Image 1 (cartoon, rainbow, N blue to C red):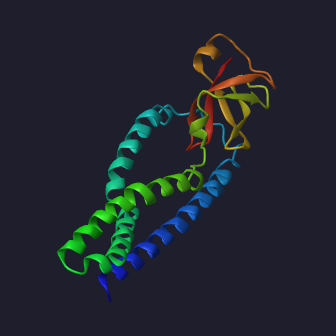
Image 2: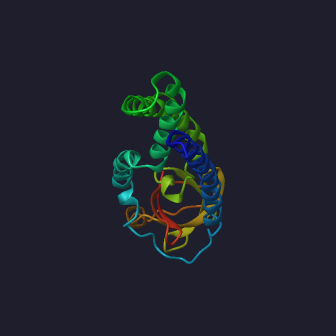
Image 3: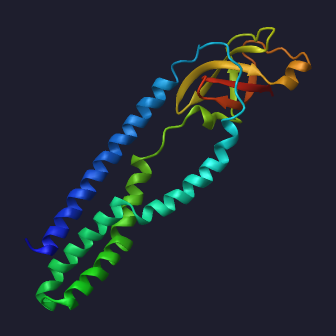
Length: 206
């Protein structure tokens, strides 16, 4: 089969499959987040201190990794294949075969990725692959005490995560407990730390 037509078909099939799988992963991510939020009345465990502190560093690492991965992404390869094949088919009547056509098709592939596919893909994925919010994203947000906190400084709070109201176990931070502060039902508190493994959090008085 003609190499340019083969490259064109490979790019079309590859990019189409990636677009469909990206939309499917987006839907699955939202479903998982909704399921996780439903376990708000778990055991009375104190919030751990190991998870929330890694949020900022994890985001920086993710950004750097994303830039590196973009250079070896299957999407980039499929895009270049589509551009190479398209340019080769369109330019062959003018340039004939041989090295000149290969070079022109290569330049066409880069231009096709840079000016057409990349902007369109980024625009589409901005809507299709928006990540679902998690409990960790609620740090520094406000929550409402559903129950009065007990003598151990524990109670249930309600907060909104990704558009859903979630109720989880909360523990008043040590400094507030030492002051003898009591949390009443309906009182507003601030999320200080989140332990996603135990589905609980540490809160402070506002």
